[in-house]
Image 1 (cartoon, rainbow, N blue to C red):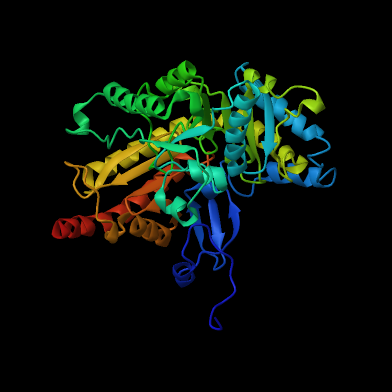
Image 2: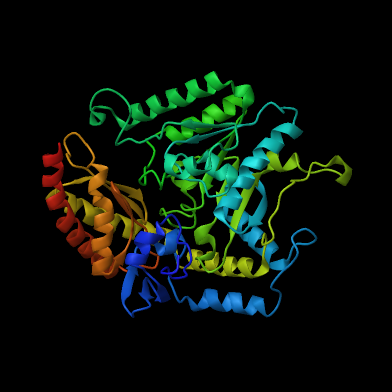
Length: 457
C-alpha cells in the first residue's frame, strides 16, 4: 500500500493499468481538450456523449454563473423553481401533445430508474398490481444504479453485483449485422430481420405472461451494443406489441436526444414515440448534471389526487430540478435550436460515415460502419466474409483507441469495436482530421491483427 499514489477511481477502468498511462485533463476549447502535460486532443466522444456544444462554451458558463448568484438550490421536496418550469415548458414545446409532465433529475441512471419505478407504480394505481416485470435487451446499458444495472444487458457490468433485483427479463439485441439465425445475415432483408427479432420478443412476452409485464425499456440506437441501429420496423413493432398487451414502452434517449443522431429526439427518426421518455447528457451540453423523465398524459393522470390518496410518485433526488442545471439546460437547448445543430449533426455524420466506409474499402478488418448523425460505430472483424470477430485476447479495438490517443484523438472502444461521437459543433475540416487519425490507427493495428487472427485460427 505504501508505494501507491492517492488517486480517484476512473469509471470502468482498472486503476493499475490506468496509472501506467494516466490521462489527466485540465481544460477544453471547442472540440478539443488538453491534458496536464499541455497536449491537445480531439474529443471524439464529447466527454462521454455530453459535451455536444463543445468545451469552453461561454454562453453555457455564463448562464450557470448568473444563476449561481441568483438561486443555487431549491429544496425539491418543498418547492420547484422558475428555471425548472421554464425548461419544462421548452421541452414540452418540442414534444408531441401526448406528453404533459416532466420530472427533472440530475443523471441518466436517475432518469431510467425513475421511469421503471413510474411504470410499476402506474400499474399498481390503475388496478394491475400484477404487472411488475421489466423487459430490456442484452448488450444494453441503462445506468449504474440498482434497477438500471438490472435492466442493462452486459454480464461484466451485472455479475459483480448479482443477485440483482428480480423481475428483469432480457431480449435478444436486434442487431442486423449479427442476427442469431442460421444462414448468412446478408441473405435476409432488413424487414425480415426485424420481423424475426419481433417474433422472439412476442414469444418472450407470451412465456412471461403479459399480465406480469409492466414495461419494456429500450435505446432507439443501442450505443453500448456497438451503435446498433435496429432493423426496419423493429421499434414500430415493439410499440404495437406493448399496446396490445398493456405494457408501457420506455425509450432511453439519454445519449440519442438533443441532436446527437441528426434529430432532436431519435423517436422522430423512427416515427415511434414511447409512453415514457428518458433524457439527459446533451440536454445541458455537459455543463451541469441534468436529466429528465417525460411522461404521457395517461400515465400522469394516475398520479394526480389528494394527499391522503398517497398516489404521488414516491421517489426523488437531492439535485432534482436544480435551478443552476436548469438554467444551463435552457441555454443549451436554445443553442441547439438556434444553430439547427440536429441538421448539422446529420450532415456531418454522413460525412464521417462516408469517410469511414472509404477506409473500409482499403483497410482489412473493418466489418461494419453504422450509426445515425454524429453517433457512429465501427465493428472490427477478423474475416469480413464470415463476420468472425478477432480473438478477444488481441484487444484490437483497444489498441486502435491507444494509437488514436497517441495521434491526438480520444474515442471509445472495446476489443471488437470503436465509437465516435464528437461535439455537434465540429467543422467539416475537423471531421476530416478525425478520419485521418482513425485511418492511421486502423491501418497500424488491423494490418498486423488480421495476420495474427489468421494464425490463431
